Image 1 (cartoon, one colour):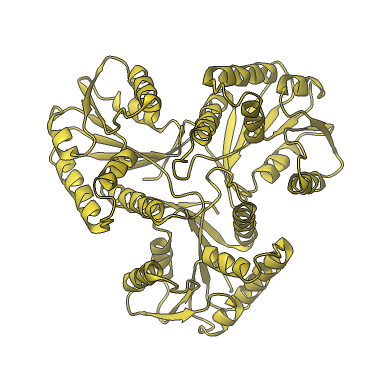
Image 2 (image 1 turned 135 degrees about the vertical axis):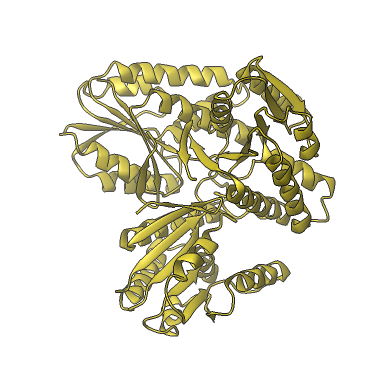
Length: 174
Length: 174
Length: 174
């Protein structure tokens, strides 16, 4: 009931594919909740590649910001793959670039977790590990990096399973 | 006797909280050896948040550079949480930004380990994993990144336990 | 027969030393296939340090680009330590900086794996984990980061063992 599963990994670590494989243990229909918007040619290409990877047994919901609404559009008992939290966080920050209110963003994460817990089917969340490099020079990047880490901690606490993916190989952290 | 424990993790990975939980297995008094100096409003806020997280059962020692002196100020049998090596390394490099002498910095790490080994209580060290991103363009950043990695290796060799924290979840590496 | 072993890790994580220790389980002769070219004083120093670390029981082959040719120069039954894929990828991209053809680079990785599979001795490959930081601003860096991740996934699928090294400590991912 309302299970949350988190897949973390670096860029092109294979985290989305690992999450897809996890989701495909559940029978269709399955819902892919995409947070990326095709703003330029590179993004269009990335989104198309991802769509091709997951095949026709998936229904796509595109929702860059309101993930509670996005979850509402999916069948209550069906698995939802939310890909990804990193882009969602970036979209949220982009709305109000000057506010930088950690509390407001964390409240949005709480609402997402509450909505997930009310579902019957699982929500499998994918997110980028972005905190393993040097401290960025600009404060917006530091803020984004901190928010990502805090979001991962909060979701990991609520999750039934957490996986870290490296080179396509999953380590179960929880 | 003089046990060293190392907690590594990315930004906002929950490494300090994991180290605090580890330290709180030991009875008070406990000492928090802080290497960060409140140079601007952002740092003041980060330091205050950390202080609030650990509560009143901790005595704080502030020492940005001379960690051997910092350890001397703590009770010999008490646990010390050293938070964090990354900022300490940054402070050390900042002293002599042009020298870039890896050997000098490694000698300081050796002295820290020697001082820790003479204590009765454990020293729990926290450090940022900073080597998981792209190669930085400027040589000072590369030097700092290399020093961090070499310091982690040296301390991990001396440590009785090493943990890697991701999304608040600890993996025991040693 | 033609075993591939992959060692991944961040900067100065101890991945090369871990790979050397792995290779030294095999009797000499052993071959070190170096992809780095000594373009400046910093690189000369890094290369010399690595050479000193591995001692005289290793024969060095220097080949920045054509790794199939590099493998051909090593004894068929001997272990080869390929250090490292990151610099090789950077050399490959540097040849044709404007083409950015992911397919061409992946075809080169396939050829490397085919050549490794035809050998009797193992090929132990070392590569940098570079995808754990923030999304880089410039598209060349994003391309390089994506290629690194895709290369790691492809090699990990073919490998008999994959290790992730942090602070000199190896985790076996596969």
